[in-house]
Image (cartoon, rainbow, N blue to C red; front, side):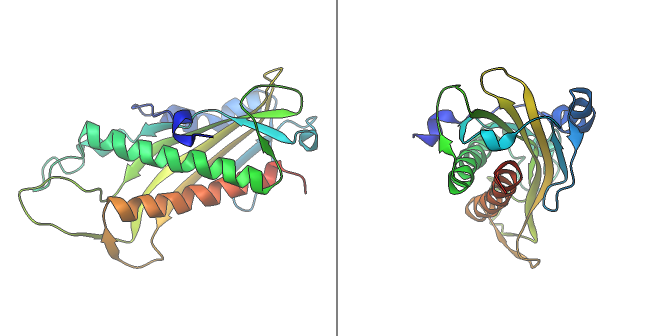
Length: 212
């Protein structure tokens, strides 16, 4: 599978999805379930998720935090810039797409490209993406150090691929921390820490949805 072919970046904030996730989930017949590793987990009470052993994965959508592009506008460095933000978002979406596929394959799921019986449709999204210290053009030679690469809200809707019935919804606010100490930050290190963050989220999603 060519992972990059299945990545989509939406250059707009989808914070509304994150903010309304709990209300929408309960309104659609889902109930809250306690999760040790995920902030919000909602499942349909009558759904037998053990019947599903295949998944199809929609393109990862990425929403930029509304304040991110303006950060740095009054400092020596230039603002992030639309093209740079799109590139960073695309890289994070690409990594998240691969991490979701890897996490579910590790749980014994088969990755498929079409709906069918026993197939879950996963619709992942990243909302409110904010990278603390991305590389930017500047008239000065600068170095950035930070304890956190940034943050985002990771979302996953789970449907029956044939009927379209919503079976589950997950929302998790994640911080891409750097082991609690100040470290040099650049696009390479930022991608590394966001990749680690999305990998943990994907593994947690596969764990709560898969057979126990």
